[in-house]
Image (cartoon, rainbow, N blue to C red; front, side):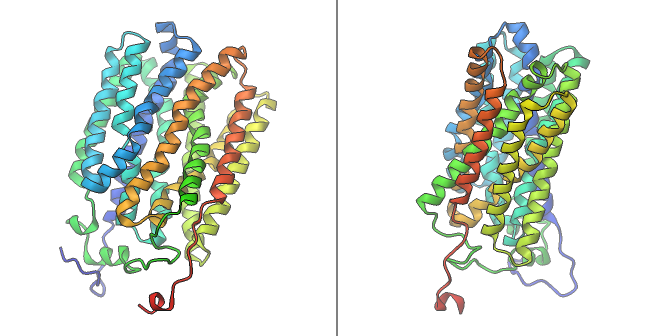
Length: 432
């Protein structure tokens, strides 16, 4: 395939870049199905193994111990070896660890399978950020980010209903986990077959599509859309904002099903359907946020201003919804309010469009890993902290929801401190 970006007149562009992101989207869906499987099965597993709320929190947290620890190494490996190799290896390994849960005999052995699962899943999101930088033009990166990231809430939605249905149908949470693991291994094989690190390496990309991807030409240093040096303040704000956002999201993922069961009196079937509705709204919110952001940028609004405004609104709505939740009596109305929370919270998927804007091309994977590491640290802390709060507060969820609302406020403040603009180009740069 030619490396030129000049497209022949009248030739229709191929659409391989969007199929690449469709594969990443599918991987993220399965990723979250595998994660949420434990949360859905936890009431059943807790009865079988006799687990306290604190021990349940430790097991739910254990996934993030290795997931957070390997974010920065994963980012470096992605920059070194490319996303295709890392995504394939990660998918195969996490499918194996998900399947190994079938032999767990107690809380400790189940915890160890979750540690392996977390380490194996670590490269996926930073690799998606790297593919965003290499496969999409600046005007498409918002859509690319949310197509990838909306797979998270959609996976949680599908996982909620599918895993609960499998447990009820098969009569075993172990067989449900085994089936989920085998599907993941199959996706790992598909990833190696179809993914490529760069558009120039994919036989399906024609010159017209390559011209669209490279339409803006090489990024000029210092322009608003150009990768540039990332300041310490922006890096810190990026990580703190992601931490605040992830505190709320992972709180919903890990303890949301137990909240619906204990505080709202839902059985396994109702809990599965409620989880599906909540996170399906989250997926819709993620897509809405990304397409709206790109539409506003392509109409001439600055990306930094668009992103900050949308993310601030996202966090404010989530905080207010969570504070209102304890005052809602009807379980159906509570699910509707949680759905609104998820819809606006998942505008936070726009965070995955930040690394290509903020970082040099050879550091995008590392910056994405740093950002995801910060979010993953919340995944370590929150399940254990919430389990402890519930144990010492006689299973009261009111203070838990207030804590999540405060985390949403932190997400807003930190996001507003990220420098997503850029200095004005010099005369010499502007005339290049």
